[in-house]
Structures are given as C-alpha cells and as structure tokens.
Length: 288
Image 1 (spheres, rainbow, N blue to C red):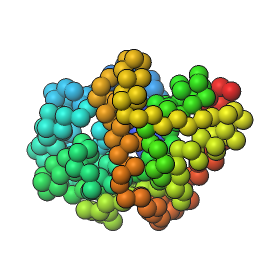
Image 2: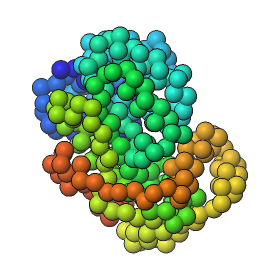
Image 3: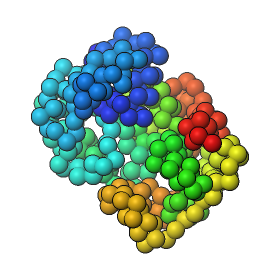
Image 4: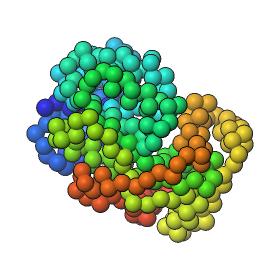
C-alpha cells in the first residue's frame, strides 16, 4: 500500500511520518515536498521516498498522485482559495485512482461554512472518494510557532480571544491517530473524528500555565479587532493570515463551547498529551 503525505516537512507532516515509522506497518510512504534537494535532507531520519508536490503548482499533482492508494491531505494556512488550489487536486486524485483521502480539517468545521476546510470537505464528499476527516482542536504547537515571538520578546499572548474556551491538542497525537488510520484505512472509511485532549481552557488559563511552566510572567491581552488588525499589519503580517488568526481566535467567542472527545485514545491507544506536559517538553524552545 502506497501513502502520499502532503506537507511532509511541517509540524503535522513530520508527526505523521514519525508515527508511521514507529508502527512499522508494511506500507510505502511517499513524502510530498516542494524542493527535492532541500526537503529530502530534512527527512533523512525517516524511511520515505520524496516526490515533488507543490499546492501552488498544478503540474506536480499527477506525478505525485499516480499509483497512490491513500493520501494524507492538509491545507497550508496561506492557501484560502479552495477552487483554485484544491478543486484540481481532488479531481486529479480521482483520475489517479486514489482510493482514500485522510484530510486534516478542524474541529467545528461542520458549523462554519466560512472557513476553507468546510469547502475542502465538501469537495471530497462530492468526489465520492472514501474519506476520513480528522478535525483537531487548537494546536498546542501554535505557542511554539505563531505565538512564540510575542511570548519570548514581550511575555505576552496577544489575541482577540476574550474569555472563549478552547479544546487543545498536540500535533504528535494527531500524527499517531493519522498513522493508525493510514495503516488500517478500512476501519475508518467515511468517518469524521474530533481530536482533542481532555482540557478546556481559556487563553488566560493557558497564560497562567505557561507562566508557571516557564517561570516567566506571561500575560494574555485580548485586543479589539481593529487594534489587533492594525498591530498585525504594522508587523507586516499578510492580510489573509490576519483573517485566519481572527477566525481561529475571535469567532469562537460567539460559538457553542467545544466538546472534548476520546478519539485520540480510542484510535491510537495512548492518552493525549496535556498542556502542562507540552510546556515541559518545549521549555527549551522559548529560550528562557
């Protein structure tokens, strides 16, 4: 069985590759990368074959998809034009006789038509391909990537999230779930799974936990939308990414409180990581 993992060098992609390697299943893993030379070196720790795959270059779709049984598909954050980037990709998957797509969506997608993931799920459903939708909660790794600079330089989390509560998940747990599904796809045909740990936290609570774990006074600041937009534009953040940040952090204030699930343990067989564990494992990333 041949598996194409898109976004292979990103946080989630690397976690999927790691989990697949640990399972030692009789599958052939193909890593979709933008640059064969540069990205193959990044993946030298994994038993994978690399193939050029670029979401922004339609000509790479067919060579990457040919002969694949399963595809682990994710959406790069900067790509919001679903008809432009994903419609031809799904069509090529059908033409290439891909049997099953495992798509990394987002929790609550079924109730939020405005986000790109909703449109991508719809495209996959319309394709009639077998699917599994993974709908993870808020990534803990956002704190070591997107939010890291503010935490390190200003001891702040600066987001318009107010008092909204968030379910959370570590990408390593997403990788474990994805790997099990990719190696036992017949058990998960046409299923959707919300992936969370057991916590439901506000950013105020997460800031307090970070303060304790990092031994630094991390403050949560919730600006109004105009202030958030102007500050981020001054920092030269792309407009589309600002809108993504607003969708992730502001809209939950007006939505139904998310619910935790047990799917991580049920599918992967292991307990999902807690936020406190994540902080301890990543203390060195912040450099305090």
